[in-house]
Image 1 (cartoon, rainbow, N blue to C red):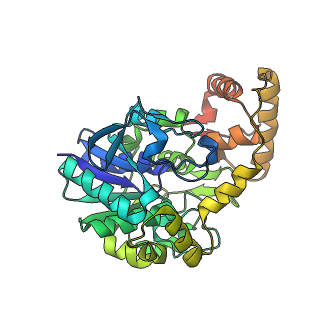
Image 2: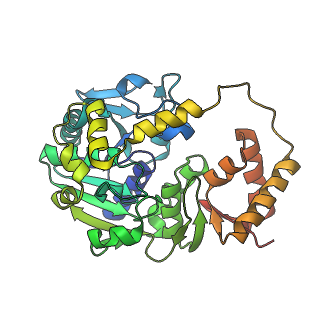
Length: 365
């Protein structure tokens, strides 16, 4: 028998699900985590989530169940880090395909439960979008969470919703979420992060990275990319909240409206009606603005990149930031993979106190 967990939003939620599983059941308890391949334009240049048809070499142990392994690969031009993540997490990793809407997701979760021999589902979200009302002005990406919540409710399987690190995704503020979540159930401990910590050497999830950092005792103001305000890591940032599925469903008008939704196009229309936007539309607009692919430029000299980083760090310190994510550095400095690897290796070896894994401390000078 395996434990069955659902990563509500994909990406960093799959990593968070592995940590929550370790905290609840121990690292050696077999588990399956179902996750979307919905990894945004930083990883996947094609807007929206990827489905089963977008991958090769998926393992199909049962109808409606697709397992991702290190041998799995996305079909060009799509991109996905799920195959690499499958090799980096202890739980097995399965694909949630939302193209048949809530109805299809319900079948997939039921198939996974039968295959696992699981009589209970743990639905895990980092940040708290899963209990968003839909009208929060800073809300950006509620659709995947709401579809997963609606599908879990439709299975009839007993489901517990876990919200880790409310506000860490820099969408709905923690102060807004707190009254909806009640008292925390537990706090993630440093040992709960040990297995996933190496993943952040290459995975861009910022909410997951900050959750790991908070669980390992990091406190301070952290800057992320493309966000209106920094995140403050404090003694509440590594807390996990527990809700019954029906209680979470009552808090989410979007999830309620997605009941029996037959497809992703229909789900987008529901999102427009409830929230006033579709995050897939936003991805389409951003993708349309991306420059055409060009030949990779030569890597800049390490000293040039280091000087740019030092200027960046000085400016961010002046703004009050103490830490930044790897993704923030990479995107702000427009680093290619060679430049990023060289810079981070240099920072970690020449000034080890700068690396507060999985974040980076901004030096005073």
